[in-house]
Image (cartoon, rainbow, N blue to C red; front, side):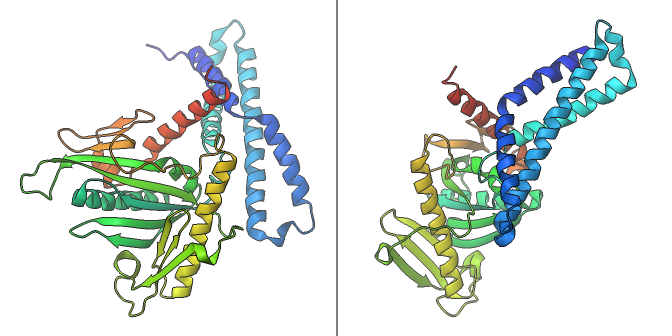
Length: 372
């Protein structure tokens, strides 16, 4: 069957209209006018980190505006050339226009997935063992390895900041900092309960076992202004071990801070200095408390700390089945793949995560439209 360029043109028009539905061009213009005013202020670069972030946002907004305009012009030009004679679509310039339009539309669609206020931030991943005994602790460690492999694929820097080893195998808890472009934007949808179904290597009968682990994802907000009373904190020190310190410390440099009112616990053992570990733990604790308050203020529109479900059956966001068949299935987007080795061993997660981000974007639009 010959390739139909009119169908390609019509498909691109529909795809472009759909992308436009997720782009608020007036909001982008307004935001860039405000940013331009801020950037012209003499003290704009006083805080270089904030200034750099605002400058990058300004440039990205400008690229989106320019790309949206260019696609509109291309489709109008191709539509006019086509007229009543579809053969005009076969000329070289029209073909090049359609290729260019498709590239720009794909790029624009990607931008609609990462328009969250913290999407460009670095991220913290926190791993918690769920139900399933030693298998669950082993599963927790498998997830840690999977996300470290994913970070490597993305060219991100990953630092294991704390690990609590399991008794017989695996890990009970872990905290990892991920630094890289749009780290939080990509990882935010990974928050939730992950379920593993396999033949257990930890029982003599080699029976099928279901295990659970909970992952929390937080954006790294740096230093935030959160007031914490001293009497609300329980601070403990202990010797570093495992991934964080490899048992090389002879002093109690690792720090565990418990925020008593919320029962939030943060442990850090990356640094040799107890003071550095305490500072890092306090920064993460303040981030979590800040986001909790922000969620309360804007529960409908912001999804930051995306998981707080218990680590047990019925709340899972994704299932990884290794027996009696091979399958990874995300229960939010219904994405499925049988290549479990590539997902778990190689950290090949982009396609899964993209499917979830697209599904969540569609859901958010439905919610804004009142479900219509």
